Amino acid sequence: MYIPNIISVIRLFLAPFVIWLIISQNMLGAFVVFLIAGLTDALDGFIARRFHLKTELGAYLDPIADKALLMSTYIALGLTPLHIANPGTPIDYYLPTWLVILVVSRDMLIIGAFMLSWLMGREVEVKPLIISKLNTLMQIATAVLVLGAHGLNLDLNAYIVPTIWITGATTALSAVAYLVTWLRYMASYDINNNTRAP
Image (cartoon, rainbow, N blue to C red; front, side, top):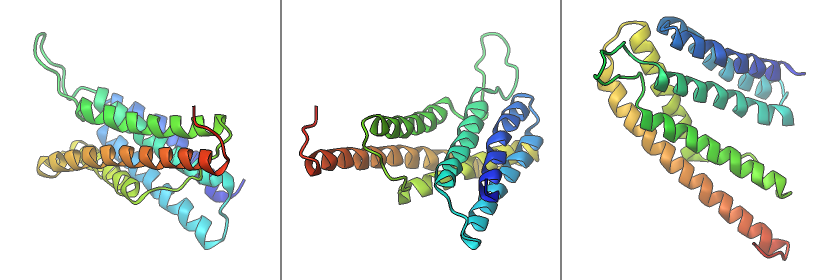
């Protein structure tokens, strides 16, 4: 296995540590591990390009590791309470529930579409859209801001609130863009192969 793929596997195994640190309320530790995972993402991409070590396995492994890290981080931040509330009082979480549901649903939609295409023998090329790249950047920015604010005791609400809303908007737009692209591909596949869509 090439070095970039090994680095991707390491990033994949960092995801459970981030979850554990967040649940344990060790936000500084979660912040540091998340940053390390982000650095491994940049490192494996650089090595793959610089030394021509791009592989088919890496093309799938890299985004899987990225999604595992982001999804697990968002779920943990969305389910971990900021404080222990008194009975009958609302509990605040590190991230709003609606954003976590949106992020997870979008990724499950994409994964489901690719799996359905594979089961139908209509392999889809893994090609990220521009809106998807922007969405990934915003998801990372939101996670870094939230983890950094609580891990370093910084007041970053002025940046976190708008970033959350922008992340939500780009997540929704990305989901729609992928769905439209996938439906067009499936329709063109039927036409090009003289088959009839069910």
